[in-house]
Image 1 (cartoon, rainbow over the protein chains, first blue to last red):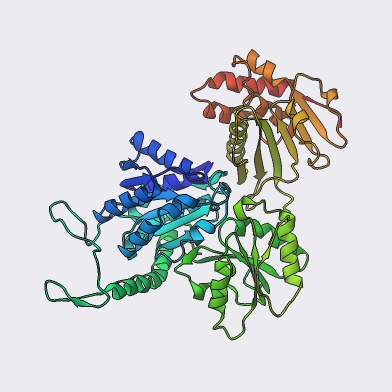
Image 2: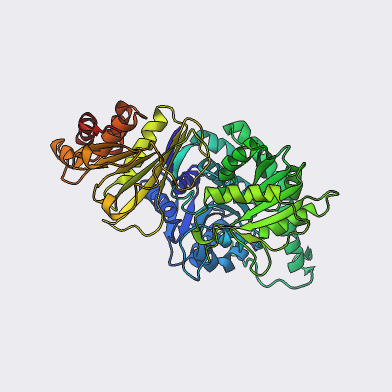
Length: 397
Length: 187
């Protein structure tokens, strides 16, 4: 069934269809309607879950960590400073290998205070051991949430599903709601290998020494470094799982086929624009206009940002002479994080395309279609051999 | 960029229901076969009574460009006084449509190259049995008549559905009465 609703409602329906058992969240713009919708589902009895109101985002994730430790399917959502406020628990959830799913409704970070969209919030949480998925539209939001639970529980790594604040969260568009029976077939009940229980109290994730040592049964127990290495190894192996999950989802629901990168007219393109999120869809129309003018250009969006799927990314740039990275975030004092990752992925290629970086839309600065068109056109026609610092689009001072 | 997308900007006051009106049109348009339907409220700090803007894009094909409308094909105004408060005429495309809820005659609105449609939705809605000031269902009738984009029948169905717990018959009647009484000016 299709409905026309907002991106936040798409996410909430995904959480409901996933039969989430515990939800703990603290409202923050532009995530608020997501949590409101979920509390409404619980209140109406449409979702058999515990909705636990909390006094902060830190507590929200702490509740999810506790719930997930007991084997419950747990969900939270936040934005911007709310995400940063839970940062300590974000690292904890990953280290504890808890399959929590969190929606990050992307918003710029204060100071100065802003409620509008950019990607600095989730990008700043890049290195905390969570899988990061970026959605381009409402269909991808609802599908990604359902897939995220399966993925998280399969690899025991928490997953962030990120989508653009306001641009997606508050915009209405049609999307299909998957049948509950099919979702149940796709996503069985969560049954973890280990779950904390009041009958068997345990001390989890206590001080772990730098070196390995024998546990009380005389078995060699991993040290901190082994545990962290396993997280990294399993994160890398999750790439294979993401591929499998996408294939299975495609078979059941008829949607998918581009789990890592989603290209548009990129197969033969000499110039390829790259970005995260809804901007990549917007760039399709710009690409079409430039193609009519004879410019051989395409666009690629990155769905999975962590683990970084460098093979698939490099593959999407097969014929590219130049890759143009548009980013709504940056590593201050250096360059865009995605730009750095893409350059790194391309480094081992024999023939490397030029890579250029543009920063735009920071704190919700309006992205003008003319600016996108002119920037991409210039970038496709002006060739410089060395490109270093990112250029900013739309700066007025 | 794409020529097939019809861009409609809705102007109302915070609390007047412009977003709901655009949402109703979005649903009706989807139901009659528009695959590309996008409705964006403006973002930030809305206050009751202050001028607010909502964007609606319609196309037979999926719409990928989620961005505010820069040059609308049509502008729908729920309160004619807003025209005097904020600049809303200048960026309408040449040959575009201005659709206004106003007690004034259509001759009162002369803009070079623009088509104008007027209806006294405030008055008509009262005749339909709605409380004074409820205009977001009625204005849809004016939109239907002026634009010809979506059949009034489909819109009336969408209105009844949206207002199923709040006077569905009266809201539907406001739209169909307004449809009949909308006056389209000579270009």
